[in-house]
Length: 457
Image (tube, rainbow, N blue to C red; front, side, top):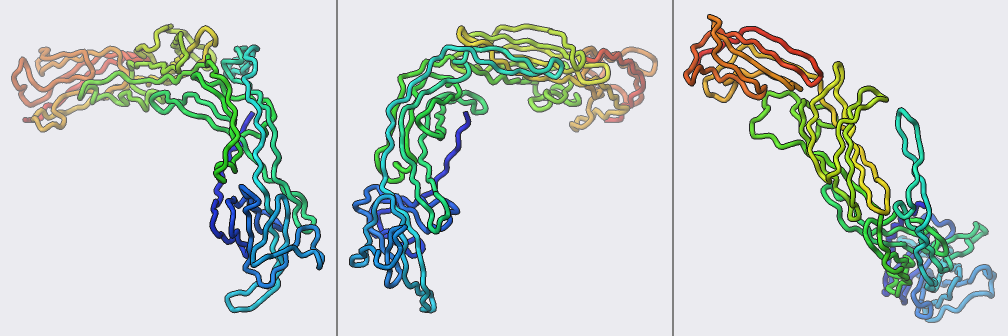
């Protein structure tokens, strides 16, 4: 059941406060006039109606209690003070002077109430027995329903109590106005705060208090409580409140995260779309080594990870199963024409609750290889090595030859390159030749050959 959020900005005072042309001259009160109220200028709620005094800036005022507004039914207005009663709507008629000292006949309507606390008798935790269902959907297989113990999903609370809203008849037959009194249900749980679980307090407005309600199952042990109403704190009077015994939580959750394995400084500077925490979910160069963190909530006992490679829209191959809380996996495959898509599921459970399942995705881009035709090993930090630009290569070999066909250098790591030396000595400027063989994560085989110009130091 959803709950309505409540925001109240009200004025509390025990000193004189003016609203329109009516003043509260004594008494602890709250202005509870409904927004957009038609026909009524003010609704005052007093902590103690016996202390309440009203006055007005109208001259020659006459006070009437609706519906008795005929001449002769005027109420006492003693020494400029009027003493209101509970649940009455008053009409005040008199003269009002504007800034130009022009008088006009004015009528003001005011409603007054005495605060009365409600009656909260108890809040009790309902039976946890029973099976609840939840619907799970997939693009290929449609929606299906699985059964889980209800205590893993929600908690039922039985609330016993009653109260009376503040109601009054609008003047001139405009209907009846109801000012609702609000009670809150509260409890402790945990919430994910970006990097960790943190204790938090839930507080929701109840639609009514003599009821049975359902709330999300808390992730930690907690009491449940009901307090109210919203006017008690504003009037600085004691709130009603009832509490349950401590509820032992069994519910679970997890917030799995992916961390790309740390690179060494400068490594893969020539790799296009080198993987990071942002692009691994949209498309990055492979192979990609990723650390997976389950980030379980308090009650989790068991972990089950599965890694799937998506062969087509409705066909996947399972590649691995892990049962540790955290683990690492290297993704090194892409499709022949499209990115390689991996589905990673993190399932957590305990002895009371079946698996909570969360899903992550990793995309490995198709391979690419781009080769420069010149480099300048002069130590200025720019283009000092002959390196390829690449993406998603899982095998690589490059051999450099001089103009006479003699092999002078070779390497097998695409993140590396040739620095323009032969056996530790500077190679002469001029033209050299390369042969490159590589294989991409998408299975594509690369074979390239050509010349590279070493320009003077």
